[in-house]
Image (cartoon, rainbow, N blue to C red; front, side):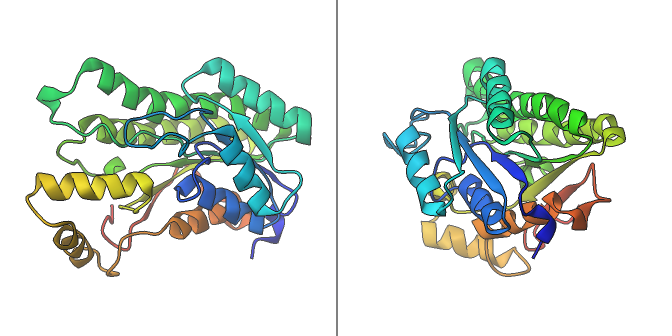
Length: 275
């Protein structure tokens, strides 16, 4: 569909889980002919993921093999570490000679508590991954793209980038912050031909999304089936988002079809979020 993406080099952070949004994005960009780089933290992290389910290097390698591309690179990268992010960019350029697309997908969405019960450590964990991680990705990927005179940086926001949600103060703050970061980065990098945009999904039932379904249905005193039925009822297109919906939006924003689009925070929510 996007012939101009053929031969481009794309990095997707947080892409080490088969059911996750990150791998769906990587797979979609690979379908368009991109050389894809999978990155994840390299070790299990978070009580809601079973051991080996997220970020293990052998799992990333398995996913890379599943893409069927010999040039798919896998890297351990903790997006909260400036050293890791800078090294990831250097490794990609050393291997491929350039960096065309960087997707800030890595995120934390399982620390859901009332504000009065949330610890400072929990708050910092969410903000560090969701906002600091995106900042570092923009900083180092953006610097490389400035040298090249072109590039596309895509942040994965949320419906929580636009609206508040109870028991999700840190997550919502981080995703609202991502909107401001996107707009400022677009202003700064635009003169170098680098575009910066954000995709804002509504709920998607990944592995983490399944935990959220269970958590919030219990919190509201609903069965999970009733909780999901209520969710579908408030979405004009009648269903929650799918990983592929977000991947398609990223492919568009990475392509020359979006060459005049920057600083945008695009809702991909079936009409549930419209501002």
